[in-house]
Length: 215
Image (cartoon, rainbow, N blue to C red; front, side, top):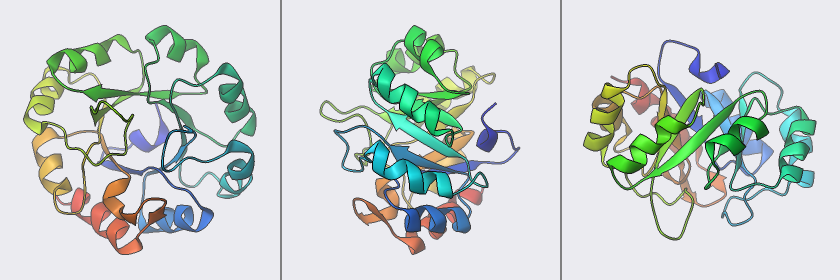
């Protein structure tokens, strides 16, 4: 089990962190996990050689998740060698077989959801947790587009043995409602706690975590 999902309450993962100051601020604000994006096509991309030294300095008090999209085996080896990530989050078109053989100590599979068929495809991944994100034709995530919460709720209720992380368009104005409807194991946010990409806003981070915790 991934550590930030092991507790009984809702966990909050702050994703797309791009600098040490934001990482420490999010951890101090109560984030359950921090996500770092190693996909070159992302607005929040981190070059591994430059980012790993400061990510390593953060310590293990707040779990660190490496986000990748259709990664090379060389990138996965580099992230594993860094020895500072609790899990890999596969956010591309990776197959179940690729994820199972290429993950670190643990892994999360992100599935971009258009319809029920996409949700059902998540069941083919033997992952400790599946992240459900909104589908868009031109991006792999972090777009701020919202999922159909009613569709997701019905699916998650039908599969109580699985742990789901809800993402996609969450912010301080809607995360409480989303949690009440879907009842996920965790929520994931990137753009919803930013005014501009690559910079997390402390007041939004703290309010998002507070709203997510009120059920």
